[in-house]
Length: 401
Ligand SMILES: Cc1cc2nc3c(=O)[nH]c(=O)nc-3n(C[C@H](O)[C@H](O)[C@H](O)COP(=O)(O)OP(=O)(O)OC[C@H]3O[C@@H](n4cnc5c(N)ncnc54)[C@H](O)[C@@H]3O)c2cc1C
Image (tube, rainbow, N blue to C red; front, side, top):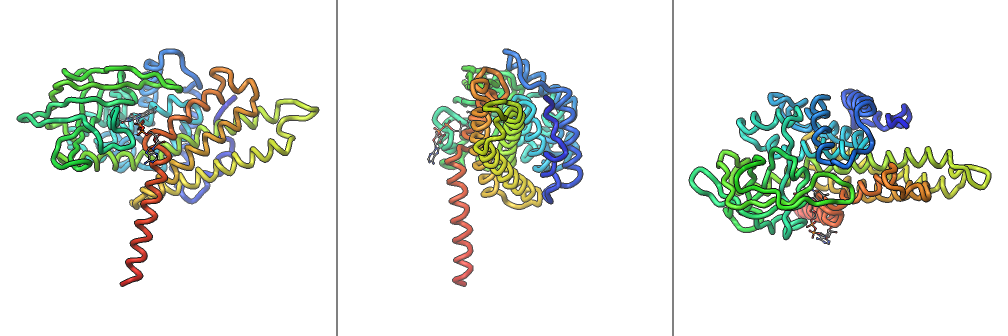
């Protein structure tokens, strides 16, 4: 079965959020992915991921994951709509391909946004060509949702910093060439005393302490730093600004997590439509039952709602506007509803749906972590609530004047 979108499936690209270049880009990637990317991967997920990064680099797709034309990027500022369309399309073809693409962006995002000239030159074009693999190391065993509780410390020592501590759940951990690591530098308590650093793989005192296997396999690890010496020139941005760097990076990529969830949901819908219209039962097909049609109606509505929220947030960001609330709405809705869409699709497959490595079974595993990482659904709810209250307070204080 080909997973290139049909003309009617592509109708959402006519929405006013997009320019013609977005439509063309989506179509080019869709055809490229159909030719170059396979659904599954073998048991060596590390090698599969390394190969995918190389392929995506050679195909030119990674130029959309970084910012700065001087460093080989497609645009000076990351085009959020392009980023989301590319992730949605890759996710529809292969979860691992989407992961490989997304991590090149997230892992180098802090450099695109805040890096010094020399850092950009050293890292960004190599990331865009797929020659360096990137990772983003923020979470710790005792600091996940509560990022400001991080303990990993970077102590100044002459022209260097000495890094001690741990990071966990780090995607690309074990295969990355460079890690953007956030550590406490102590300028102020809590979120204001954190800085960001680029740590090259193989730096003395840096080790992969543990590889972690998860339900949808991809390279993941716990990192350990013991007296790891990092030149101060590897710090990204100002000392003490690391929390801002991390949040700004996540602000760009959060909407794209929603887009990946949308890609998974679209693929599940596609699989379910093929199955329901061909599966014979009770002298008709599964799709002929109104119960099935009602389920399809729910799935299609969930998909369109997610897409509208995602591309609203992406468009708004591309207009240079703040999207904290809109990106959180997109991520919350798209990831939660994709889980439901995929579950409904799997149900239509009956026993076949739970056979290892059939597409709906893979999607069922693939979607789960998206409701947790880059801010769990509960955290997105808190963000939306907080932003709404801020907006309300601003309106009412305006009324009083
Ligand atoms: C597959 C995968 C890949 C990842 N990749 C990376 C990576 O590349 N880099 C990186 O830095 N991190 C990464 N992470 C870490 C991820 O960002 C954290 O897992 C996430 O932030 C949640 O932190 P935690 O696991 O410590 O859960 P906890 O912080 O312990 O939260 C547990 C649960 O509590 C609930 N919760 C949280 N806050 C609240 C609240 N205020 N009110 C009510 N309930 C709440 C949520 O349901 C949450 O799932 C990855 C995680 C996974 C699973």
